[in-house]
Structure formats: C-alpha cells, structure tokens
Image 1: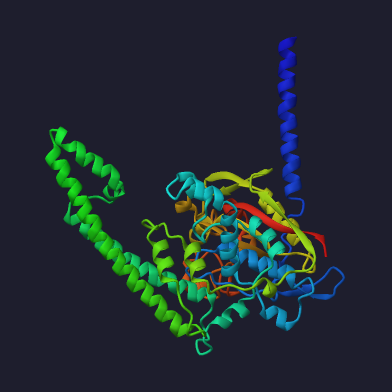
Image 2: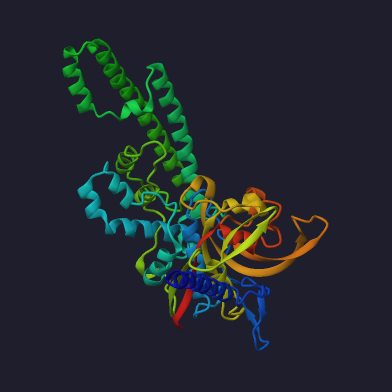
Length: 471
C-alpha cells in the first residue's frame, strides 16, 4: 500500500510539473502573434490614428572603436523616452544623447564610489581589479538607464562644439576612436621592441614581473647556492632588459603624447587646450599588456564633458524591468536532425512590449551574444561568460515582422518565420563594415538588422524594458 502511495505521489508530482510547464509555456506564448511593428516608423494606433513610433527621431549610433555598446544602447533608449515626454521639437531631436559621454561618466562615478576601498587594497590587489572597472567596455543597460534618469544626459551636438568647424565629420566618437587608434599603434610598436629585447636576453614576459626587492634578496643569497653564478647572470639580464624596455616605453609614450597634442591642436576649437602630460604618462605606466585604463585616459584628457546645468533630464519616471532568458518556460526548436532548448522568458518580455502597439511601445534593451550575427541560422547557444565564443554585446529590439524563407531542413519547401529588428550601435554602414551573415537582412534599414526570433532568443542573456511609473 505504501509503495502504491509513493507511486501515485510520484505520478501526481510529474503530472503537476508537466501542467506547470505547460502553463508557463502557454503564458510565454500568449501574445505570440508576430504582428508587424517597427518603432522607427510611423504607424496607426488601435483607434486608427497615425502616430510615430518611439524610435522615429532617435539617431543611429556608431560606437566606432570604443566598446561602449551598452552606453549607446542606454542613451538611445533614454532618448526614446525623452522624445515621448515633452521634448518633441526639431531642436530637441537634434540634441540626442552622447553614448560615449554617458558611458564614460557612469564608469567614473561608479568607480569613485568604491575608490576608498580601492586605495586601501592597492593597485596590485586582485580584488581591487575586480571592483574597479578600468575599461569603458562592458557595463549594463539595467544599471545605466536608472543613472541617466537621475543624473541626466549630455547632448552630442553640444559636445561636438569643442571641435573646429572645418572638420565637420569629427565628433566625440571619432575623436575618442582616433586617440585609441594612435595609442594602439604606438603600443603595438612598443610591444614589438619589448619582445625583441626579451628574445635577445632569452627571457619571457613573466620574468619581468619579479619585483626588484625579491631579485635583490635572491642575489644576496645566491653565493650560498651551487648555481649562484647562473642565478646572478640571469638576474643581471633581467635588470638590463628592464632598463632597455623602460627606455623604449618612454620613447613610445613621448611619441604618443606628441601625436595627441598635434591632434588636439588640429581638431579642437580651443587651440590653447593643454594636456597634463605628467599625469597622463604616470597613469600610462600603470598599464600592463592589453590592460589599458581607458576610463582614466579620457578622464585625464578632460575634454569630452558637459556641466550639470547643460544636462538634459526627461519628464516622467520609469523603472527598468529585467527578464533573464531562463526565468521560465522552454520550447524545443528543431535544427536539422538536432533539437535543443530555447528560453522563452526573453521572448515573452520582448513580444509583450511590442504588443503594446506603436503608440505605447518602447525599445527593448538586450544583452546577448553578437556571434549570432556571423553564424546566421546555424547559430548555437554559447556560454555567456566566455566572451571569445559569445562576443557579449548590447543593442535594442525595435521591431517585429513575419517573412517567408527557404526551409533549411527541407530546401524544396518554404516556411514563415518571425523576425526581430535589432537597432545596433555600429553605424549606418554596418552592412559594409561588419560581417553580418547573409541569413540576416541588414540593408533595408541602415543601422538595423533583422534576425529570426527563435535564433536570436537563444543568444539573449537578458532583456531590459522601461516600465512607466508616471508620465
């Protein structure tokens, strides 16, 4: 009898789990109609009135060589909100938010919060490197959007006034990228000379990490050891190599600093703008290998900024709702002879927002693996924490449509698929500059790309939507 009860209990548990999974799957697909909508177009509301989508006046961003995708995404989403809340004149639309500036300011302000801890730990403490975000890359829309709502945003148009008018194509993004291009060239040249010196003395890069005090102790103890002669010779080689490398580093820094001064004298409207050379070189000497503190670099340049009085703040208030891909519900997507699980929470969040209609919907921020762009429909889920195979990225979904394609599993047949429209931060020439797969349409709307919903869903880590608190 007990065995029967146990069996019944197990059966009921399995049944309950199946019902729950079915309910979750049903709720995740409740609004799954793939009705067409594009937030960067004009459409009709439920009452038939002609209305503009929230992205109609939001400029396409180009992050150039600075990896601030999350900042450009946040700035564009914030503009979509601003332009729906009182700032809806032609002059307002021209004052779109600077993605580079807000990303830079956000990182500086966030790092300043933990600077006392940072100073206590010291530069070389591993925990300090974890706490302080020394790069402009990375970041999260879910953190930056509330920051923008509180602190306001800076106009790209206003920031661009620092440049000489005869260089019309120069803006804060191209300027910052130009600095990084020159810096990377100088760094590559220095690394080449450094490696040549290491080869000359038969040393490895890790040999340079041995602190000088430790080397001195080894030298003092070496006479007591059988191999003291070879130890002494190696220690001397390391010291000589370090001195030669330091000479090459100083040459590279001096040349790079001169290039920076020349560029500023050429492009900046203020021809008397000066750089704190001593502080900049002192900071640069803390950088090792590819670990470049770009936040500190541009903070020391102190040129791309706006005052508090110049910052634009939106009317109304929103909160940021975050939906993780695996929060609930799974469906199986077949691919050739294989089937794999597709998370539906992210899809549900996206479709729910788009189904609010052209007059109410806002862009949806997504954190996802950008490798989906290059892989096409053959894309397979990648580990989010492995950036080499994932290519962590942030963008916005601003539309949805249904298209007919050739069925990959049955080439003689066609099938309908639902696609999402992604507004990227790679500029209007992304189709020519980046390797989008031919499965995806990136030419019908410069700055955006259409990707199959089921494929993109497997690449999404989480979504961020703006939920109105009050208008």
